[in-house]
Amino acid sequence: MRLDSSDGNHPLSLAFREFLINSGFPCVGAKSALARNQIEIVIARDIRSNWDDLRVMPTLLAFAKRYHEETEPALFQSFVIIFEEPDRLTEAEFEKYLWQRIQSYSDKDSFFGADHDQRVTADPSHHNFSLSFGGEAFFVVGLHPGASRPARRFQKPALVFNLHDQFVRLREQGIYETMQKTIMERDLALAGTLNPMLARHGESSEAKQYSGRVVEPDWECPYERRDFSAAYFQQSDKNAK
Image 1: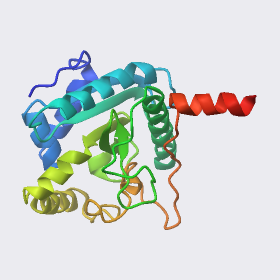
Image 2: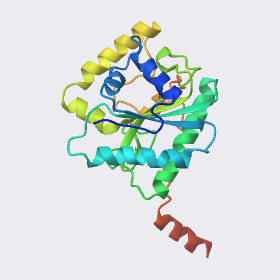
Image 3: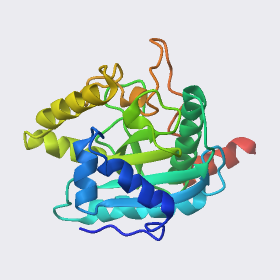
Image 4: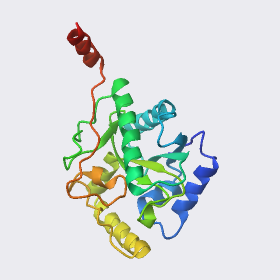
C-alpha cells in the first residue's frame, strides 16, 4: 500500500523523512513505514491555532477509513501532521498545544458522527485508553525542537498518529516484544539514558507518553471525549426549552 499526500513534497515533509532515515533514530516501526512509503504527511500552519483543523480532519478520517476497509491492512502505517510554527516551544508549552489540537480533532470526529473505537476506552486515566478517529484507535507521538529526548527532537512541532490495531497485531504475531526491546536499546544508545516515560503497550495510560515530557506522578490528562452527536444536540435543545 502506498500513501500519497498533497503535502508529500513540501520541504518539511522531505525533512521529516530525512529525520527518520538518520541511523540514530530509534523507532524501527517508523523506519519500516518510511521504507514501505506508508507515511502520509499533512502540513498545517501553527500548532497553537485551530486554523487548519477542518482541513486536517478529512485527511485523517480518510486515512482511518482506508485502513478499516482493507481486508488485510498493511502494518507500519502512520499519519503525520507537521506544523510550520512556532520554531520553539518549551516542553510544557508543547504538551499544552498538543492536547489542544487533539481535543479539537476529537470534538470534530464526534461532531461528524464517528463512534469511539470500542476496543479501547475514551478515559485517558485508564490503561486501555486510546484516541479514536473515524472509528479507529490511535496512539500519538509528539515531536518538537525543544524536546529533551533526542528521538522526539524534530525541527518543527509534529504529531504522529499510529494505529492501535497495529500494536495488537504485532503482539499477536509475536513481533511486538522484540521490536519494543530494539527501540529501547536504540533510544538508550542515542540519548545515553533510558526513557522514563516509555512503557509497554497496555501497561499504563498511553496519554502520559504523547508529548514526550516526563510528567509528574499526579499528572492528569487535559482531554475528554465529548459527545457532539445529533442526540446530544437534541437533548440540549430540550434542556434549553
